[in-house]
Length: 469
Image (cartoon, rainbow, N blue to C red; front, top):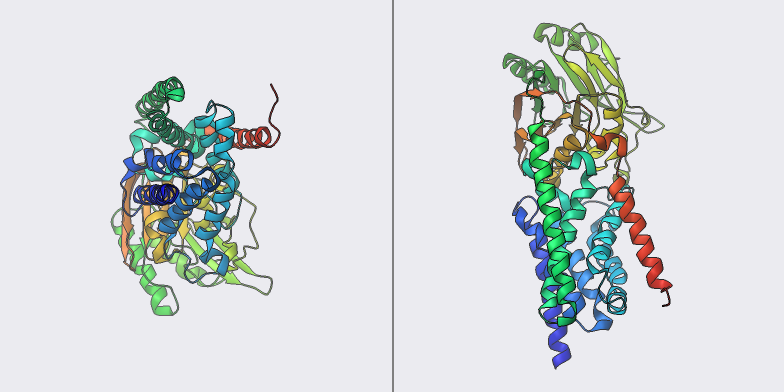
């Protein structure tokens, strides 16, 4: 009976963590919970559940979080995407099954560091997997807290995730110390150290905001969210009309969504488009999709007021689980214009750290993001743009077809947004400060993620091949 009660209580605590962590993310946005959400799960794994079943805490907590986080996001997708939370839960169970024995053997000296490093190391691995990307990274819960996220320009999103995980595991060790005097001093030392680390992070974040260049040039930009897909001449004319409305509000750069046109604008309707930008005096970022025998050309071009097409960008990360291709991927053009240096990425490129970084390395001050989302991803996907902006110190404009458009400045402040689970027409207009594209993370890349991945491998090796005394 006692064992059964421990199992029930342990699974309940793990499920509580799944719920708390889910609530920290959009659409609930109870972001403070991300700092404590994993504590019940970790305590269940190392204190409550029987040792042989301890991995179940991680399986239920992590798998349950992704079940709550993804929801119906992949309901109409391939089978492995529909079952992704269960797959993650099984993997987490297997990963967590050895943790407790390792920490009991090492006197919990590495408890906080190992737990945080393994979690972020797995995030690093996920960042390379086409069907996963950075979805569900711990740091994303903080997307509406620009006062807190500025060090991401140095440490990347993995640095902030590591801080969140250190706090969670430190607090969990503190709770465990209440029931085990042997780790009381260890827990106290870790909590003091993490408190100083958190204070230093916040201080650095507040300091970085003071270095913001107030005299940075501004440009009035617009993102058009039409709430329809162009299928006829009438739809095309409506898109022209929305563009004219944005220009009438003073926008000099206007962004259309991914695949807005079912044809290459450099080959069809070119004269109409040139007349549109000439009359409005705007730079127009046009997403278009052209089906060929070899696959899909998912591209974006920029049309100047003088009627010149500046070049073509091909989607860097096609949605593999949806069978999407991108024949012209692999180049990252940046265009020198009177408005500033412009670059572009497309939709799913937001979910990886590398593409925006490559464009920023080429000097982009402003990156446009045409997208074509579906309702279930709307509340979460636009939050990714905040971190790509801060990581690279660039301004970003996301123009979606119907659900989640946003304009974000180089410090991650959301200037305008239109986020809805139902198709909704919107014209977002904002005076955007140009970025500097000088963030250290542009050169350093995901260095914290790599360190955590190396740390994860070291801990695994030490666990499998323990060092004899």
